[in-house]
Image (cartoon, rainbow over all chains, first blue to last red; front, side, top):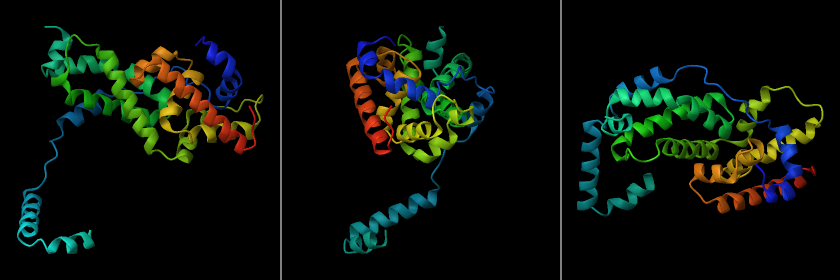
Length: 77
Length: 172
């Protein structure tokens, strides 16, 4: 990286930094990751159970019909 | 049909070909940023998972490699943001290497500590520019910023690093 900005301002700290944190020398992947990817692709998509949706609908309805419940709900969150 | 066109159409075989073609490049790029081989493997998988999910929005005439590198960089940056600095020091690839006698242990540890505490968006520029010797245009392209912005981040990162080092009693 030949740059006057770096040469003038950064030369000292660059050397110290490279000794403290040596460049990662051509890191090689230790294994083929495709089997892991395939497992992930074959997982069924995450689904929210129907009773969670029902609970959410009930809560929304209760808050719509009884707005006085909102402070109580906020308090318990 | 071209490989990228088939990928964009959702062809799993095309995705596998691209995966096998690019997985090593993505891994190498990520490990240079996060400096943790195990985390880099997970982030490589996550990069391709995102790519697969976004296949329908990919234009086959676009630069696939650049798109891949941009996603990988963003995921690596998110990882750096979530990771505590002390964990970063423990898992760093340099922790496994033999200490260099030219630099005192105390100075080296102070540098690594100060570096790990830099904000990730500055740290990644310092890491790629000063440690890995990437050019400003290369850094800029990977981060999706201009070369001027990369240079500014470098300057700010080094200034902050020097400030932290002074506080630790080190003057490189």
